[in-house]
Length: 86
Image (cartoon, rainbow, N blue to C red; front, top):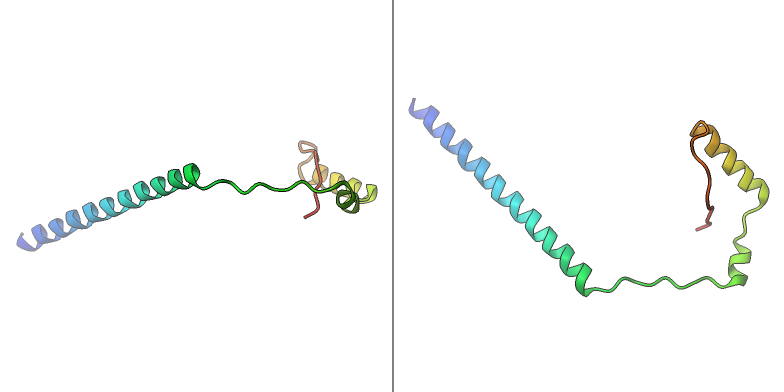
């Protein structure tokens, strides 16, 4: 029975250790997220000028093909709201 007691003790110590380490990971992660959200500003995207956006225009044939593919894949439940080139 002595070997079984040592095994259960090792099991308990291991489980407590894992619990403590995972708790520290969660706590430190949430603290880092709060710090970053509070003190580091978000990068602002600049607006694209009209001449550049005119160059990015998608042809009506491509728009129709994309809308048709979305309609086919989603079986009529999805719709295309906006198409952007990247």
